[in-house]
Image (cartoon, rainbow, N blue to C red; front, side, top):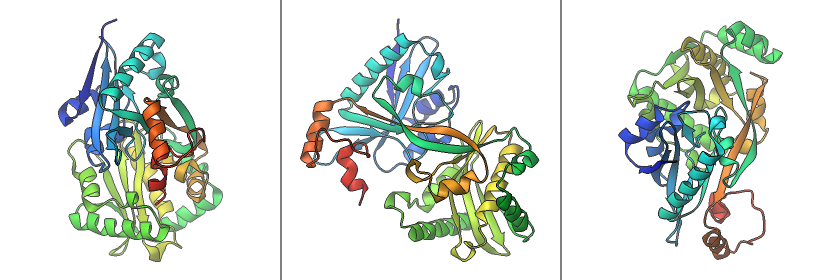
Length: 346
């Protein structure tokens, strides 16, 4: 069996492969990876005559080490292919595994991590390479249903609340002016302050502007106004089949009114107008069934497993990094890679 492997770091080549895939998200694109500040975007390609497998990752330095590791962008990523992963032969998977290990070795990487995209069968490729682990469940809407059918499935109290919010006379519109992106960013940061979020969630104005203005995307910033006051908004990512609320915020003065419920209902309508199949609401923080998960569950009873993938390719170097951090080699850790755990909790 003949094949070739490529390591891609440039936009044109990267996105040419992405656009040939069976299914992909904004999260898989070069531009989205280029927004990550942790490290360098890298796309590993394994290609046979009529098949290719791509694995987009972020290569990070490991402090006080000559080694690196690979991680996932914020969101849902993992491998992509031009065919369904469940239809890939075991011999191809074994060949991919061998070459992926060579790739990690050539990049001096000790391990790799990614959060998987739940609407691809990525587990068929990865379950024999390291481990695929459950990370709770994630919630979605089937946009083939009419909006009336969807609303009939809403929690009864939620349905009444949305009806009342629509009667309040709020204006719902797409952002059209840079000043609106500025105002939304400030509102979003205030939300992060209130929630005590880690620094990694403080995306700046350039981040939002880039995702809205990049020519390859059709993303939208949907805003709700009470008169001239912005009270709620969401940056929605739009892919070929999926629409999602990527990042959202509500004015502190309007938390009691909860306009985010109206916004979620509106995004489902936008998805239908655009002909999308799924509105992916996501899950709770860290895969937990927390208050965020409960909020989303009032909109839909449809669930799909959320998973993460962890792989140690150089066990000796990984163990040395644990030892340097004073961590036990045989202990199981909830954070991967474990040697970054202390830094992640700061």
